[in-house]
Amino acid sequence: MRDARPGDGRRFEEIRVSGRKAAYVGLLVQQLLDDLEVDDALVAQREGWLADPVPGEVMLVAGVDRGVVGVAFLLPYRGDDLTDTAELAALYVRPGLRYGGIGSALLTAGFARMPQPQQALWTLEGNAAGRRFYERHGFTYDGTRTLLDRIPGSPPEVRYQRPAARP
Image (tube, rainbow, N blue to C red; front, side, top):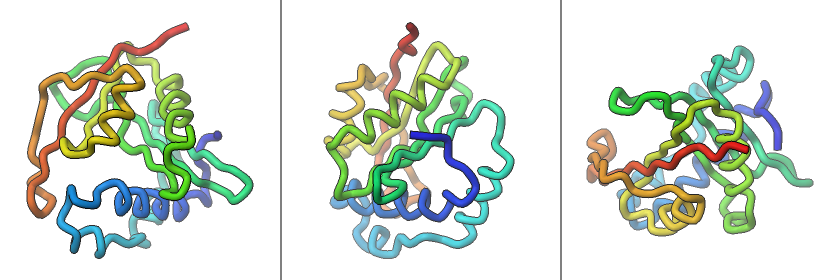
């Protein structure tokens, strides 16, 4: 586990895309998943972030002998309705390595780096495996739900929260 650095942008995006394709089958329009691909503009944007990190944001990669296999991105909460809250904006593991502890390690290490006393994340309402994962890590659904109307089919997304675990 380490901070993402310049040169990790393409691999970060490859894992994010493959992770979405694996996690969201049956939850998003299949054509949307089929059309997902690594976008060179997003890779360049991510490389820019990695070259000049934004204070307060954490971008981690997890690796094994085969290179980077998991990614996480955390930042101060983006909405207006929560204060002093850290948000997990992305957590993906290479599909063949899911359920092996990599996601847990990324989640734990990422939030450990965030100083906020509250932690939050959004996940698709129908993502039963993801919801179980977050619940095992102490997150609870807070009753907040929204429709992702920028995505075909407008799938509902739900917010989870927990207090930060501090030593």
